[in-house]
Image (cartoon, rainbow, N blue to C red):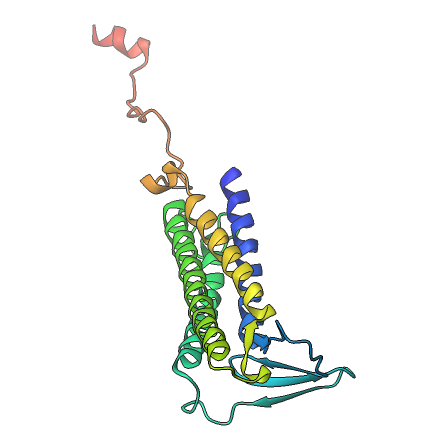
Length: 225
């Protein structure tokens, strides 16, 4: 029961992390315009993500424009796009595999050794998905920091400087949940299951049946004697 509880906890943590990964991929706030060190208050806030760029006005109106060409984007944006899409796919496959491998479900084989391997495979997929997100949200801030400091030294305009957006923080939280959930799925397997003990045992008697030997009645024995 304890292992089943750990599997359920790990599954729901990884599921929440996967939903966060999808949100991170779709959000346009990967970077936002920075006004640090400037006394000028502007009425427009600029945001940019992996798929579109947005402009938010002080009146609350938001206008977004999807990137026209993928090949015209910077190489780190294309790389982060690919990594996030791969992470979403790995998480989706991990959800299906984990449902089949958990002890509390009756899907698939009922042999605990087989279900243990399937559950560990689902946990490994979640770990890969989380690691892919960590790589993506590490590459993007690296180029963002480089661009920020270069724009300061080159006396770039305010609109050229960007800093971390809220989507990056959502991505870090989602990656943490996914990795934690995958780790719990991988570590929730008991030693008995790993040794391959079967859940259902064949119902056989503990003692062998004695052969049915017909005995002669005592009256006939006296006649023979």
